[in-house]
Length: 146
Image (cartoon, rainbow, N blue to C red; front, side):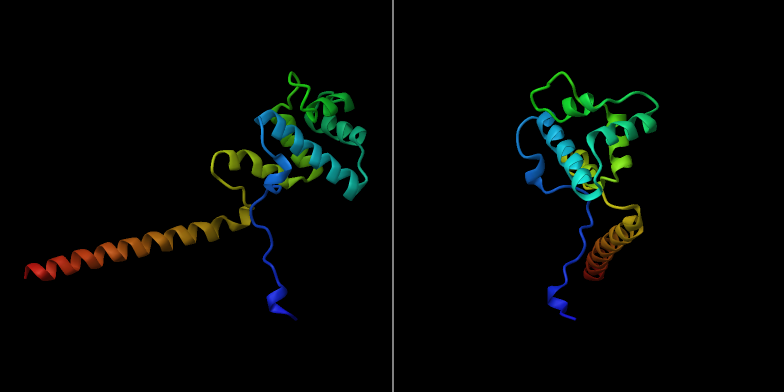
């Protein structure tokens, strides 16, 4: 086993920045949805018609293939995916890569829940180091006053 060939798994959800590209948020979202639909077609042989049916079932309201096409069109500026439909798309396609977009816009990342305790432990250890350093500095100052 070549340990140097091992690469850690991607922890944060999200597509590569080149998928969303530049431009307006509307255009970036359209590109991301297009990519998720292409991935579903390539990896699971799921058509846009199939996705529309799955979204309709999950949301409890009609979603047509035409709506999907408009959501993926940068030119169809009056037709943007509603947030509940975006969440449903993530769910029905298991497209966790879509999850990273919104947090990334705000300077955050989306990570699986299984990492939450590890992250919290790291933050506690970081704070403990800071407090220990502060305690040491205070202790040194107190010794200097004696």
